[in-house]
Length: 228
Picture 1 (cartoon, rainbow, N blue to C red):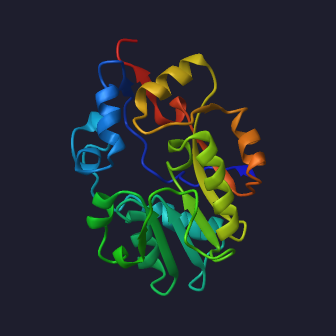
Picture 2: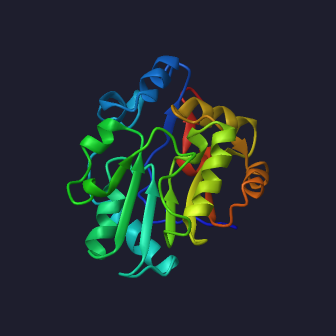
């Protein structure tokens, strides 16, 4: 188990992301919870504000191939693959690689990339995955674990361990101080389990998770108070 940023090639915002009580409200969180068109392609305060393929995941796919020693013969699973952008870029690089995705959003699946749509499985939750033990060489879960309750997060982590062979990458919603906690909780619309950076390792140990993880903090996301 190690802290490692496998998203180091992902474009960062040029300026701060401003948060505040009047920006992402409880209404925004309610709308986001449906994970429908409003979350993906609606108002930015309710989610992505337009979730379109633009090739930004290509660098991530390429770096993951190197970092995790993936080949044409590898098997890969992305939990919470949404519209399949990252899966598409993996498939484009290695057309014969075994690729699978798991996703809860009907809207995301129906609008997923044609190249990988047939490999995406509809899920009601991520606490029990419909795959064999040790089926995948690499498992990815970006923005997934911390969108679950603590109990379900632990179950999801255990499933990642079960279906994988030890190589995995996840992101975790976290903070280092009270200001960071306030900023992150004001920004996230789906985050359910947001913990201190010193608390997450205990959760990972409980789940016997051995893969890589990266903290999504206010610093990493460049969050700032609207009037401060």
